[in-house]
Image 1: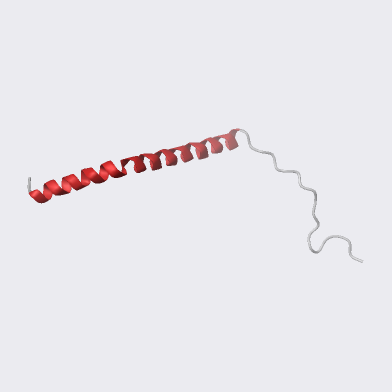
Image 2: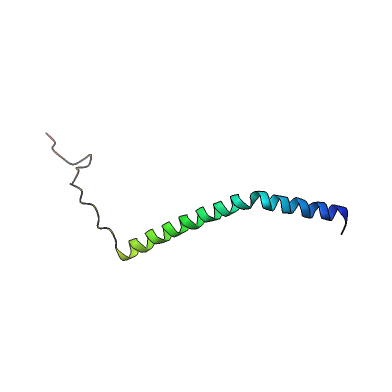
Length: 66
């Protein structure tokens, strides 16, 4: 193993050790967001929400004209 190879290996090991907690946190957040989106999608498929009752709002050309 050359000196350059050993230096590269040490640099990669140091970078992995420094960034491993950040990568782990990012992956946990992404996984949690995916679980929430998937659960919401399943809930919508099994229990669709009824459309909200809205009173009729006349358009611009409807309504009382005098």
